[in-house]
Image (cartoon, rainbow, N blue to C red):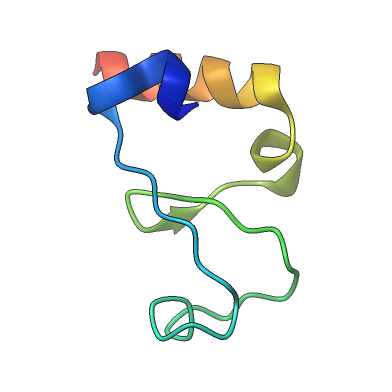
Amino acid sequence: MKKIFGEKIELNIYTTDSPQAQKYDFRSSTNVLFEQVALPIDVATDKEKMRLFLDEKLAE
């Protein structure tokens, strides 16, 4: 997504045991947050759904 959206998004990847992730109650190993809100797993793991989601959110 960073290649598609470039400077429009900030991308950080953390492990679930990192200090940044510990404030959330993650229940699986795959989690994606957008503006501090967790996305549904079907969006987080599907490239086309994620692109559509970001297209909409970043256009606002």
